[in-house]
Image (tube, rainbow, N blue to C red; front, side, top):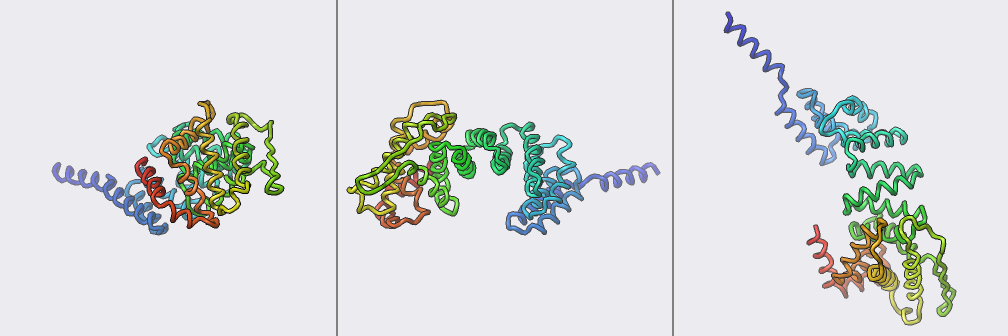
Length: 339
């Protein structure tokens, strides 16, 4: 009799214990489906995993992430709002996804508050720093967005989107040199695509600011002596940028292609900056200029300048590419070795 009772008890315990191995298998299957864009099927797998193991924070996180990708912020919020009330290993990431879902749903204020909560869990979570900066920038809170992006990029200097957004914020706030170099740093990481084309156009416009060409012998240079200095005093640099731009209008350069003129402007500006920049405490001097100094030391600035402008497809681009195959290969190998 006692033996029968013991067997029954063991069977009941086995039934009651979640099949965690099955839950893990279902989660992995769901992730594979997510990676191929089959979101509805992935959601079904994650829900099955939560039936097997209701305590699985990973399953909840993956489910919410998939709802976000599908564009269903309400379901995403429903999954995560109970989960963030208790500590778990995915907590900062959950705050990030939950903030995104509030933002997608049109509640920027709540999104910002949620990102902040996540940063209290992990102050160096780069995704939270970036996502909060994105929302701050979109809502016109540029000072904090700038601060967040500088911190995020100091931790994760190869994040192309961070450099692009910081360039936009710098430009919006009138930090001409910092914006130019942020766009150029972005182009070292993402030289192709629509964002690259936009960044290249913005960088060239900033490089050429203050140069007024009246004719071949009459070029005016105007530099704002009262430009903002919170992100470094780059008055001398901006004068050099303008002089380099004016030089492209000289008669000796009139037969050069548009691509070659723009490439030379980028190259000469970066050379002057890397040769003359003193060690300063501002973000651009600490984090961005040293990158270009490395290229300068490797004699790759000229090649970089051409690579940064390829997306614009300016007249003369293909001729430059054909004539510089060896240096382009050296440039590519440099970055491959730096990874």
